[in-house]
Length: 420
Image 1 (spheres, rainbow, N blue to C red):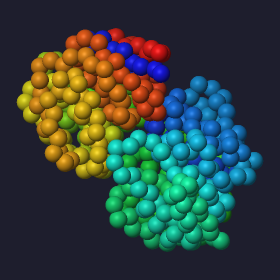
Image 2 (cartoon, rainbow, N blue to C red):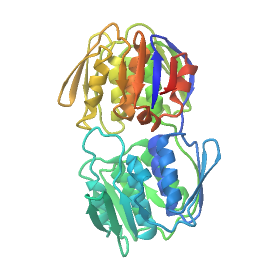
Image 3 (spheres, one colour):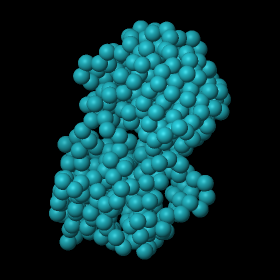
Image 4 (cartoon, rainbow, N blue to C red):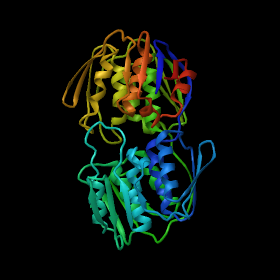
């Protein structure tokens, strides 16, 4: 068992460099197996989800090798297996991208149902509906937790997503790259990592247009080739450090980011009293005095991201006044609130709306990370609390944050990882 120990109430000062985007790399690694050749992926974050995908691809017959820190080589020329039913697939959510990738390459796939964080119902019905529309037969064996896909051929078609879904948008792009004709995704998600995945596929020879808008067109090609590609910076990791800087006070420069991706957050940080300085590839957060309360509603990009909701709840727990946080994406995202209350936070939840009554002082507590982003919220609360905080279930945090304790230490935080 590993825990994080934090002694709080220290301002954060200095610079932090952001790693490659988790939500992009977990789609781009599976995308690499569509090509019969070698791809090089740069700016790779050292996180557990990446390790799980490397293990999964290796078991499918690909060669995955770290050729440098932050650089992964994927050689899928010997890939000859479409059965991805091992434990590493079941451990993470993004393993469902193996469905689209294997279906594109082999016209069949057998993939274990994905795992990942549990903060509400996370069905994959839109993915399966789209695969059927492209011409695949789908067998849903929920008793054994396996989805089987098979098609004589995949044929492009118009697909309207009933709800905006990042995962379904990317999975359709993957499957449609080698389909006959043109596939049109309407009501597509627009997140930066969708654009990043489309850019990687296009570098491999795919013909995808419109990524980043709500209509994406994929013209099928006969084959893809390997490519070298650099992952964009992680929008959510950057936001986590920005919120931590705001909550703890101090002056932090968050480097290696795309400031445009942070617009919804920087707007709110200015609202609650922070000074925000933007450059070409950095944002500086200057926080002095007590934060102000605000209202936040999570939405699909370019709205405020649901993946920054728990961190913001922790950051607002000491703000002056009552903040209202409305969650529109996941129905059970507030399951971490009971852990925050252990710090003394005064938070009332009614359905998908939380009222955060800011208090002047939090106290250290022993808490658990209930999911990845909730774990980041516990860290932020611990950094602002008086006394010592002990955080369990660190494995959730490791799924999406590279060397988080080292990066926070460099900013002046008193944080360490302990094994028991």
